[in-house]
Image (cartoon, rainbow, N blue to C red; front, side):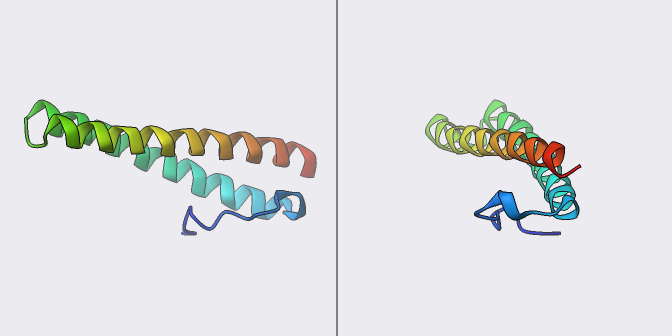
Length: 83
């Protein structure tokens, strides 16, 4: 699987196949983000992490989720253009 951090700089030169591969990768990343968020909540509810650690990790997770959504929108736009 391609590392989600390997995001192409110029999406305008992607083929339909590349867009589809990135979309699959992005969906997988989204699933990982949702799983991590649920685990984080469970850790906090069980008092296994401090409130401060939870806040830092949750903020980071929200930033990643925002990036995931941005990439999904870009890919959706690119997929429509390449078909």
